[in-house]
Every structure is written in C-alpha cells, then in structure tokens.
Length: 96
Ligand SMILES: [Zn+2]
Figure 1 (cartoon, rainbow, N blue to C red):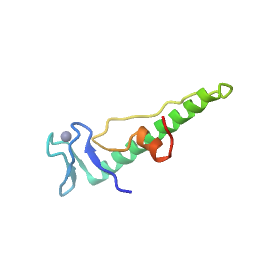
Figure 2 (tube, rainbow, N blue to C red):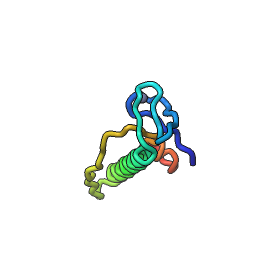
Figure 3 (cartoon, rainbow, N blue to C red):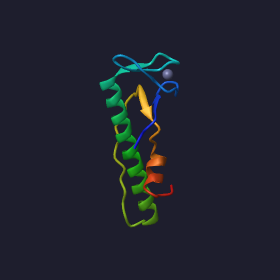
Figure 4 (cartoon, protein in one colour):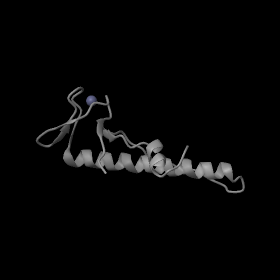
C-alpha cells in the first residue's frame, strides 16, 4: 500500500532533503525519523477514530449496547497522509 504524504500546514507534497523531507511551499520540514513518527501517529489516530465511529454506529443500531467513547490522543503533526477515518471505513467496506 502506498500512501500520499502531505504537509500538515498547507497540504503541499513534500520534497526529499538530505535529512528527511521539506515542504516546498511553507518550508515545514522534518527528519526522516520525525516524519515517519508523525505519519505513524496520524495513521493510528485515524484508525482509532474510524473504530470509534463504527462502535458508535453499532450502539445506535442496537440501543441495548452501551458505547462509551474513550479519549483519542492527538498531537500537532508536521506531515500527514491521505489516510482519514472515512477512507479507513471505506476500505473496510463500511458506509458511514
Ligand atoms: Zn507546507
């Protein structure tokens, strides 16, 4: 699976540098390791949101099931991917 990486600041596609990646539009940059960490954390957050929405939908369809959503940790990202809760659910064959 290939993912498209975007600048979290302005949405441009970053270009590779000696140490990592840099946004050609706003100058946002990160080392390879930091970018990798951001992308992984963003991916995990999107997956958690998707799972929570799915649980809430189940709770709505089945009122006898209690769904108590937990806190999903978030952070400021420098770089993100096109991975969103919507396309996580779409890939899983769910409609939201
Ligand atoms: Zn940018």
